[in-house]
Length: 228
Image (cartoon, rainbow, N blue to C red):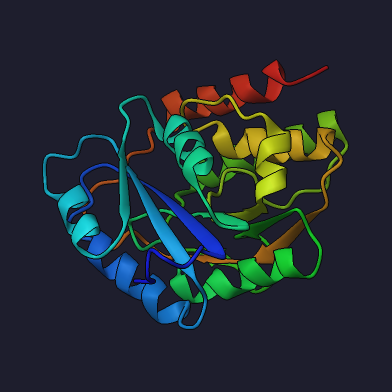
């Protein structure tokens, strides 16, 4: 992990809840991928009872606690980030650390937001049942129709943003609607958005936290609450 005396160029914000079987491998992957780049890892933990936070802290991550949901965790992490580039990343090894430099490059060439997409050529997913794939396609089509966008993916959390972009988004989501909110508000704020291919792996171990119908409703509500 980088020395605390160096200001990080990249801040990686990772929401966690009982990910002790994955968090060490995820952090090692980040360390290997970002050699030579000053960075920090901010783990926003939902009071895990399996030692997730302790493992992350022992590996140099900053630990913040929250108990409301993924969106709230990301917003808190974003607010504490010190890097010029801020990246959201899952702890379950579904996001490949070797794609980090692509997300960083998207910002360095002039975009405000660089979003991984599982549905561009070169992307893909091992972790999306057909009913979730159908729901995601419906949400993408709805956002593109209502907001005049051309997104190929919507509910995927592997993305990078400038500090200024985060400030201009004025995010408010508490739960899994956070990704849809970023997409929508980026368009409304006139931000420069780039999609890059990303391959989503199946989670390495443990149980996923997303609940299709509950969290699908949260995403749908986010889409309609931001009209106007």
